[in-house]
Length: 162
Image 1 (cartoon, rainbow, N blue to C red):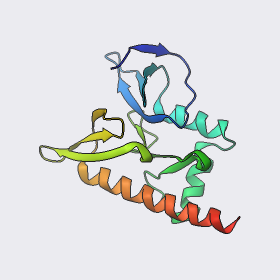
Image 2 (image 1 turned 30 degrees about the vertical axis):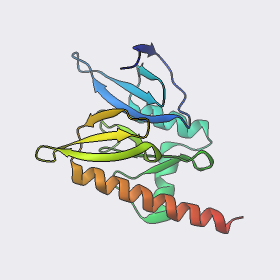
Image 3 (image 1 turned 90 degrees about the vertical axis):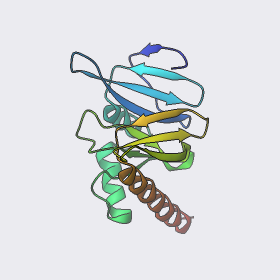
């Protein structure tokens, strides 16, 4: 970690690269937030933080998930846009209903590589930060591709509205 900053609330922004679920020894969950130049521990689950961010920008996680379904018919582990004007597209590593679900910002992922049997994935972010995520390499590739497809389709729709 760059610095061990513990905070109770966090406002996601265009510099947020990931909100990673972290289970503590007592079975509760917190979040490690990765920004381009900062790192924080927040005492909320990643999905709750995503929902708050969606609400800040005028929707909710449920609303964003419904929008993703309408745009490209993805319903399971669906990517979302928190705020399209800022390019804030995130995707979950597992079902958002699980407290262990992390969310990754699509635009900050520079490279992915499998570990050993491919059951985990090493992610290299655009700022050089490297983390290992408990998501299979195949699932990670799928999530990246689905998010790219969603981004493309939503951007095409938004062009039509202008």
